[in-house]
Length: 521
Ligand SMILES: *[C@@H]1O[C@H](CO)[C@@H](O)[C@H](O)[C@H]1NC(C)=O
Ligand SMILES: *[C@@H]1O[C@H](CO)[C@@H](O)[C@H](O)[C@H]1NC(C)=O
Ligand SMILES: *[C@@H]1O[C@H](CO)[C@@H](O)[C@H](O)[C@H]1NC(C)=O
Ligand SMILES: *[C@@H]1O[C@H](CO)[C@@H](O)[C@H](O)[C@H]1NC(C)=O
Ligand SMILES: *[C@@H]1O[C@H](CO)[C@@H](O)[C@H](O)[C@H]1NC(C)=O
Ligand SMILES: *[C@@H]1O[C@H](CO)[C@@H](O)[C@H](O)[C@H]1NC(C)=O
Ligand SMILES: *[C@@H]1O[C@H](CO)[C@@H](O)[C@H](O)[C@H]1NC(C)=O
Ligand SMILES: *[C@@H]1O[C@H](CO)[C@@H](O)[C@H](O)[C@H]1NC(C)=O
Image 1: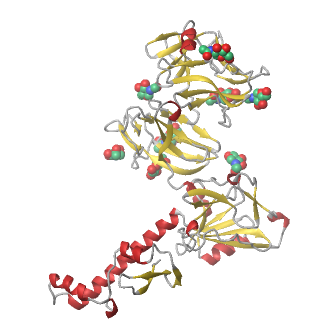
Image 2 (image 1 turned 60 degrees about the vertical axis):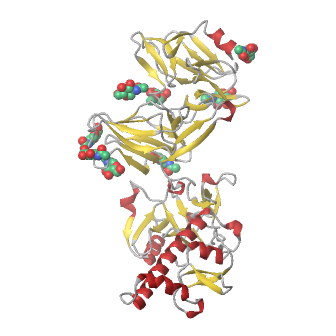
Image 3 (image 1 turned 90 degrees about the vertical axis):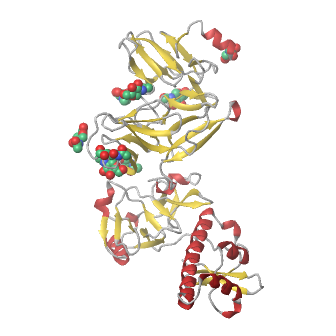
């Protein structure tokens, strides 16, 4: 590696913190060890192999080979793939061209005859084509793909793109995540009270892990927008912001050295992955198993578009136009169809659950409807097109989907907690919340009873003495800690059944008395 670097220095020379690449120069995909590297070698431009015979042109952070920029199709945002005869040509006229083995130009910087005198790559990861005034005619920082590195500015008009998802910055300083450049499923404002255009809003990730927004009009010039969970820690942590292909925007931190370098997410824009529009594809339903998002279909009336990839979505086994007069509404409890701007206003109706179902059934332009929370009366009618679902035990929404013939529901996703292996973290969280709520209610009742019996007539010191004298059998209310309840029910392991307001568990108290413990919903 060192030998190679020395050899390469014959035609590269270095000034200050950037490596200069003269015109003309070439990188070949077949020569695996060719690269244009920054002075400290922390960043390099090279061909990164995807397979034995396919490569992408990328800037990587080393060690770890984290791709922070790649030559991409400016329409789809996808990386341009070349074969092993592909090469990158920095021409005498200043144009930078990526050429496939067949000789076709597959990517072009568009800088021919614009005064480019040389290229450079610096230790912040910026690759530039510079003119005689050292002014960048083209740079990787100004043409980001899906990643932003520290010191890189993100301004109005730029886009980080990954598949159907994109991040952009509005003139009022709002960062937004959109699906298909239209559905806005996440937004973060520089300052929620700003509603007018700012003069030159931009945001950037600091190397210590803060995402900051900047504009000359801010009193201090900047606002903090987000912090990585390891904010400020470690001097050798390299952090970057990436638009991931699952529609989430994340800050990643890379730590460690060489082969053992770890890349871990330390902040995510959308904390609930199932809220990302289209995550499970068209008609796909997102839910959680063991706290991981999984994709499924609404019912047996649907089948996955790709059995190996649930994220591709679902299609009806029989299309609606093939069964005129024989449609019914499938009911999905604890399920909502995601509705974000710009759809929100045009799809809202304020009706009850019966009308939310029947209005959709009767309307030709409705394929599904969703009652946001039973009781709220907000009913969204989904028109033919892309519909994205979310199912979760704690969701208060009910949805309906138009299907051909009889609705054939899925087997239940969530089983009783009697089988331990089915217990997801979500379950545990729900149980903890329920138990805490129950305890609060119990404490309130017990306190109430005590007050009823003793308030004003007894001294508090006497109360605790009195408490110890109580016998479990006396029938008077008792107070238990969560720990005691957890122990007595062996961790809520023996379920007796379901009561009116929640599950009932068998418990054994320290005096061997058996009791029933109910979780209130
Ligand atoms: C670079 O790779 C070529 C073969 O592709 C090899 O001949 C050459 O020795 C390598 N150079 C270094 C410095 O590793
Ligand atoms: C995208 O590509 C088209 C045609 O190749 C080109 O005209 C256009 O300038 C490119 N846009 C950007 C932003 O590079
Ligand atoms: C480059 O050529 C290979 C076949 O040799 C082809 O599979 C690939 O799609 C081509 N890349 C582009 C961007 O046209
Ligand atoms: C980012 O923008 C600021 C203000 O416009 C500028 O001073 C700075 O040089 C820019 N950074 C880069 C790497 O372009
Ligand atoms: C994405 O948007 C375009 C136009 O804005 C539309 O034609 C296309 O159907 C949309 N894609 C999906 C999957 O809905
Ligand atoms: C920017 O986002 C905030 C919420 O973060 C919102 O109140 C405001 O209306 C948005 N402004 C624009 C112009 O979209
Ligand atoms: C938001 O903007 C308003 C008006 O421009 C300003 O008074 C306020 O201090 C700003 N808030 C923050 C957190 O910068
Ligand atoms: C902000 O700028 C856009 C385009 O530059 C313009 O259409 C819009 O009216 C402006 N909004 C305000 C509130 O000035």
